[in-house]
Image 1 (cartoon, rainbow, N blue to C red):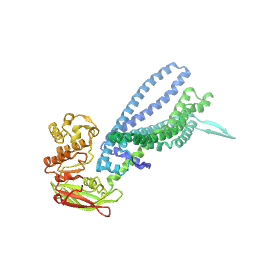
Image 2: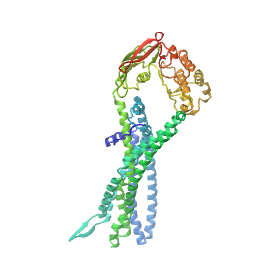
Image 3: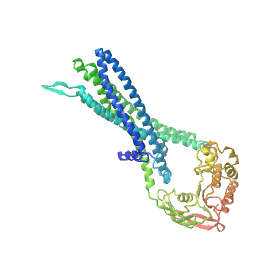
Image 4: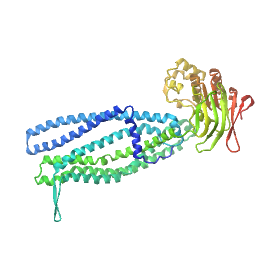
Length: 584
């Protein structure tokens, strides 16, 4: 797997993640939905103020045994409750809708960034980011839901605080006591008690729960590694079974899960301390305002209705001031998610903005032109240097040489996915090109979609045409299952997958075809048939193929052979094949 990312995202990076959607082509719809949600949130606060006033009148009616007022307040409570239910339901409904719209937009943006300029390829090979699938599938959802939930919760808390501060100040009255020989009077003393209570609680909770951000970050990373190990076993089940590698795989999975378990227990211990402190804080807050206001009630200065109103207002103020405490777990998870996305975003931006030393351009006369091309490994060690060659239209060139000399890397550079090196590569931009790698890629889906990949639509080809190319490539037994949905890379053998790749070439009819050990899993007879098909069915196609076997030489006109030099680099020798023989 990849190395563990570490840096915490700065708040500027957080803003860079959040702001694009609110400035996008959907900004008017987004801001309209957000405005509606804010209005409903303000409505909820207004209704809470009305409930606070209702508390005073209702409990005074109970204490005074005033039955007409009691009935009137029951009716008032009924319509207040109904309005509150409607407001709460639609606030949640609109919030969920806005969350999905935001997530959909961000998912499309990040998929586009990840798949543009081969960023998915570079970040994987350069180990710049771990588990990009989790970033897009999980973390974007957590970012949108967490940002809306936390920001709207903070807004509601601030509005509630400002609404009830005045109420609490006015109804709590002053408290007087003697400090030595001095008489001290504190106006609105319940408000000061609420502020002090929330301040002390926030400091304690913040100190106890601070490690949760890192622990949440690590937990997601360890979980993703474990899932990746399980997926790897599924993808390579055949090879693992042949190696009898179950014990080794089990040990790796056990080690990965041990990291999950260890981090989980650390998180549990921190959460236990946090829950103990927050539970004590929350439970004591229920009785605390009654205890503080009780002396004025028992002295007859206030009635039960006002006592209940003070308790309710204190609870609202204290709850608003305790937003940080109540949301700490969500904040820790959200911040860990932001850190992961910020690292992912920075890695993709770095790939998309990094300079390309191998310049890609359009060929004028030939289908391929290499000008003073040097290709290196990521660490800078050269594979070959100062290669200049051209591939004429309709030419068939075989690339040969010892293993590790850079033959496959040359094809990656031509495809534009290998940035390490210098020089210039020009290709015929207006011609259809197709690469057939040694390990063919087959998407999960119907066989029809697998056969026509990478075409966007499989409907352009008739069933008769698809069956025809399957028969050419000795895959006629697959004709009845064209529309069967399956993971074909698991159902087909390596040889069948390579023949399916040749069937794609016959179907798509590229004008330039690149083959990288595309017949390595085939027997000699089948390999001969596949190359014969190229000559027969694609006679005008330009072909550049990498191969080791002598038997395919007769299907090519020229040979580009890499030869190892004394300095460890390779040089390219070009010759006609009737003047050249391949090494055994």
